[in-house]
Length: 481
Ligand code: TYD
Ligand code: MG
Image (tube, rainbow, N blue to C red; front, side, top):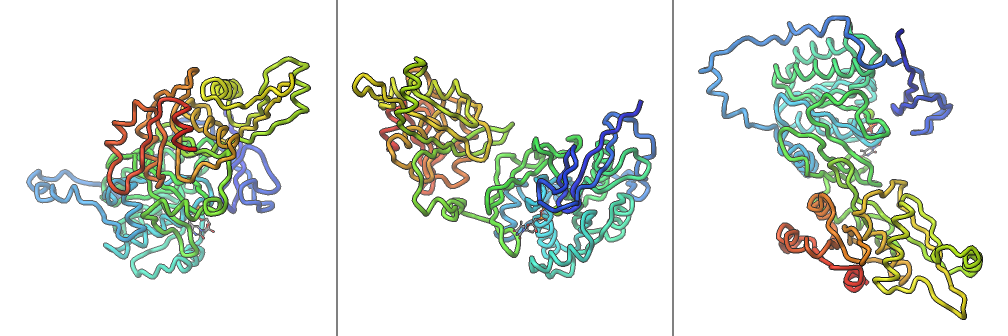
């Protein structure tokens, strides 16, 4: 029996959900969720594939290729501050014949980003075709107007039929082809509605073949699902992914055959589109709570998501409360009450005990035979959960900061596991975490002592971030507070 699931997609922002909602959970529009049937994966492709006739290539003489060998390393340059950031993530300019997938949440700015990239290429080397299956030509025109794009060489096309798109591209022979988005295009003869697994896969490989044969780079937009995967199978060579960071956008590469995946592009959003940020520490100056009184009990941890490092904030709030003290003395349980959100309870308990025993902070006090008990609230900002032990030091620092009522100065990150003896231990992928911190313009990173030397060698120079190695929690407290 054929099973087909249905998915509800918001026609205004592209948000999709298994369930129907009266108001879109993403953009809040009312009555925009439409039902689509998706074919279950693994079905046979019954129809024909896109006809390759249009883009057929013939065997060539080796001696004819010789002359072109030099140009094989050529990349399409992207100039300016904005272009520099994109180039950095791509590992240099755009490689002719490559396929680049730009993924991200709806509304994160993918269309804006690629329209700007398209304009940049058009201004630089000529003709670019921007195809949208989501917006009309007028809508793209309005956007381009807002972005102050005036180039004569940018061609707009609104279509969802891959064969039509490739035919137009073939005729126009642009220097680059942009498609917004992979979920809206379809191939006739392939089962499933557009956006379905089979369609996404077939359309992507048709585009990839087109790119290879014509040497025209294809830039593709893909919506990501909640889990961060591009909807549909991951058949793509590189996935570039933007993520939300308040008014800034980070662009990083997940897979890249033509360069490193370590690079991070930082952009500032503005009325006239995305602007490259060359000095990311600006980002923190622009941050609302950086210039105001910064709060005690806030510390920055670095977590890994696959191969990507993320910075997250851990908050701790500390209260002495006589009421819960009495209640707990009676119950005879642990003397520190903690409430956690996003942090493992057992891990938090361990860190609290270590702070009391090894670092000598008096989180609990004996007053006239009563044990005065502290209540600690721990929270990870933005609802991420901190499951890695690499976040231990940040949790400890947040608790100490709250207890001492001393805010941790801005621009310090904490990366270490805390052992039972209060000692700081090494964590997996420390270099990667630390270099992400450095790229984001942080001034100081607290790491285990044994990693200090090797990391300091990597991060040196007048502008470099300071690496502070500590043996244990006491040393950390002395060097930060
Ligand atoms: P859009 O590029 O449409 O996002 P996506 O294609 O990923 O869904 O951008 C979403 C909205 O944000 C759009 O209304 C334009 C606005 N925007 C700005 O005003 N300035 C910016 O720098 C960016 C990136 C977006
Ligand atoms: Mg869009």
